[in-house]
Image 1 (cartoon, one colour):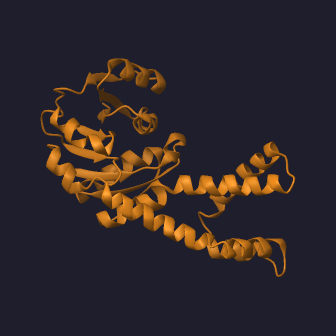
Image 2 (cartoon, one colour):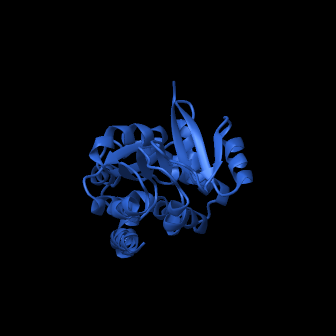
Length: 253
């Protein structure tokens, strides 16, 4: 008999995670609007249990919380019962805050990223260690996972992996614009950039970034010239500062 996962919230992240779980779990989704819950079911392509939020009983359920961080207080006040475990995907929402507002035996914070939509998320996890293996299995359905020992680490990881797709999107767009500026057609530049990122994603799994750079940079060559321009533009410092700024913002949420 398949276990049931109860999603509180029916947004894009909930749908992405449910897509990865629907073959192995029964899906239950809880929200404010029955028509939006029906659209969630249609997009998922399998039958789900649909319930409205107000008065919903989470007694002994495995809950995956996918609401907006600002709505924690309101959503928690509408629920009844005590959950078996609460898995939260809310950025910057501490374990303490989750335990304060939700009635649950255990809490695990998870931080998927945008690649969850293609089952390639880099998801970081922390919380009640008794649920480490379950959390890794559950979130492993949408990609790879990394358990971290402290909340500080998951907030830093949010700044890296959670926000990272936006940073890489900027780099991808800028490199494409650079090729167009030099005379490459836009469609060709986009296709080449996509091929670049696809291949690099595989290479970086096993090769240190510094070694990758050294392997492609020959003395006095084109890569060395381009790399020097990036260093002159303080791209490295900008990336370091981006992670710091995102981490500080995560602490403020």
